Image (cartoon, rainbow, N blue to C red; front, side, top):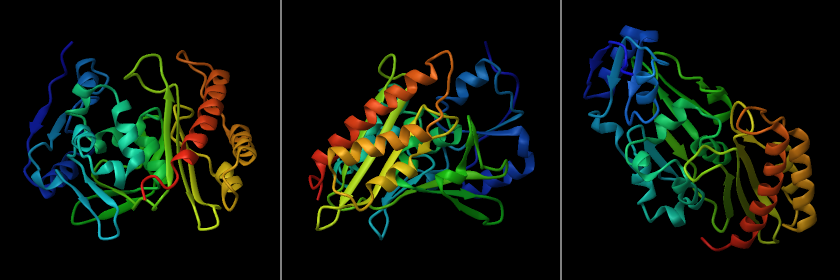
Length: 293
């Protein structure tokens, strides 16, 4: 199939992008990598009257270290650009580990981080990464308007976000990685490159006495949005990273999960997969504590 007719605009600045969005509002769609929007257009599951191509907005194509040691990612940063950045292995090890699991290299060569987040598939790796890392998602609107949202406020359901029709997800800000924190990313899918039937992300840091500080446990592919296992994190906080504590945290996590039941996997399968993956991920994260200091 071919897409329905649409008007095409190729702005050169963020201001021009926002002006077009304000003018056309609900009738406009932004395209960058087009790895999701392209197929939707061809199948006419998306029928915008206006397509705003941001590929020539050079000011959006960046990744840079923040003064606090965090990482700022512009809306045009491709997945493969981060994948090839060897410095991420030390500065953002969880991101470095997860990116190769995102679809296939050909898709990562064009697909953008902001595009994946804007699409908001709850099984997508980037939704879990920003949730686990508690990233800041920067939305720009007309006349210098700006909103900074946390993932819990940004994701509102399957393929649904808080982005208004006149807004652009312009930047993703990942906080600095805590020195010595351990990490793990694991997922299960039918084939490499498929969306996750269940996936888990873990970050474990410890203080001088070996007690866990600010632990992070997040899941993808479980619900209509990425899940932060806050109750389970509370079990870990202040405790020693021991097997009994991990088992209790996973049990608490499972009691608070309400997995999806669809044609890809049953709710029971997802729950069992999440439990098994999280136990493995906690153990792997423990084994890595101190390795990136």
